[in-house]
Length: 107
Length: 118
Figure 1 (cartoon, one colour):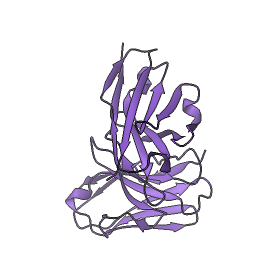
Figure 2 (tube, chains in turn green, orange):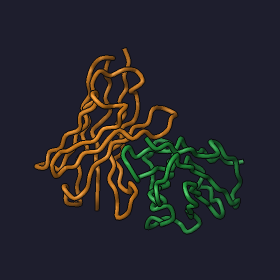
Figure 3 (cartoon, one colour):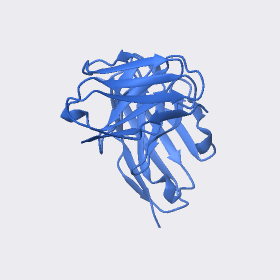
């Protein structure tokens, strides 16, 4: 199975900050990577697919990029509603594994 | 609009089985695979498997092979997942999900909490 290693596991930041979450795949997955946001008690919400394509309706402060097997989710200016847990997922091969998550907390 | 509506919370004893449903609407049932993902309390997301509603073929993560069965009913647009030989570690919220226009799960059910306790 393909392993996804997310870092950091926890991130403390303030409103207005620029934050970056990374996800490293254990082998090549092309651009078959998605990012999700999850709030407590809710299903995950798709933010980005194909490594850098913004899902419809997602604010443009979210962006994604790829360099080889390293992927990055960037939030350009944190808003209060962005404090949540973020997951990456590879969709290159089954099983569609997830990263372990990054919890973004208010500083 | 696309909707995935799951059945309600369940409580089971260790060793028992549970069957969860995911009723779809708003699109052609056979046009998209349905995926199942679970999340234990305070833990991350775990992919369990998929079913192709067209021909009911399935693929299960190795962790669940032999203990999970996914089925579909095209007459009602519903997919089911049964988990057998339940243990306390199976206590989790179980989600069904579907790809959107791109390679990402843009549609999710609301989740079904399964609690396993003696």
